[in-house]
Length: 400
Image 1 (spheres, one colour):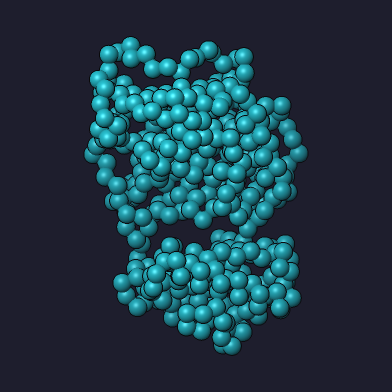
Image 2: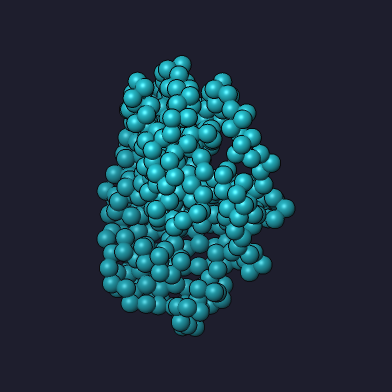
């Protein structure tokens, strides 16, 4: 067992970015107004929130209209943040600007980034080390209240402060896993996945599925997934993409010469049919997984299916995700867990891997579609409805 990592905050849930997480609930209500939040503000309350919850929505930082110029009345709050950073010298802080939905999304995103940058600059002027600060601007994309009322819009106009960790060791181990996978010309694995949905009554329901993937670089892949309500096989032989619905005995084909990377993107973007664990099949695994990550933690060792693993946790604006990587000469992923930050009740998607094989261990496969069941050929548009990701009685709802 490897040496334990340095201390981290384990109360934070630490993937596959293309996983579609579902909620059927609406936006939560808030009793407080922005004025209430500002009136109740205390520096020790901010410090306590950052210490226990690692985030704090700050109201009262004022800017000139449609500009990133901080008004003089905000001096006290900037001084408080500076004092907090001096009181907790190990903390690193992410400053995130948010706007309401007045105006167009693109200018709002730019303005929120500029305001976050202005706050960072003001803190650096006050003596805070700029290496301890990062910024982001999310514009109107993360509302905490309805934009239909002045009070809701006021709540959405805020500066979010959040503590973050950036473990070089966690990034290094993720890179080692990625390099190992990319270096395999052929590989195969089985998997079991669990996809959570949330009902209007806040009940979480898990949809389970299992399957297998065989990959031969650069241009061949076979993937199966059976989930009770669907039984799907996807084949690509370098020239033709085939989608087979085993439970409905129909299939569709399209000419798609290219690489596995190209077919993964086409399935996801054009046909809404992402391959299972598609991110770890790409030739740029690390770049795909690390994109947008602002927080990385090394949580020490864990055990998945009897295999000792390094447990790594990462945060992005839309999801928190965690990966367990097998220790030793073959650092393959044993499990991924992704938690949505954009939907009520934080639904999760998990995938656990088994039966990894590499190189000569992988069974021979020509990746050609044989149609042994005399399946009916149909148009690709028709098969999209027949190969649904969820049972027909499940209806997608709005985001938080």
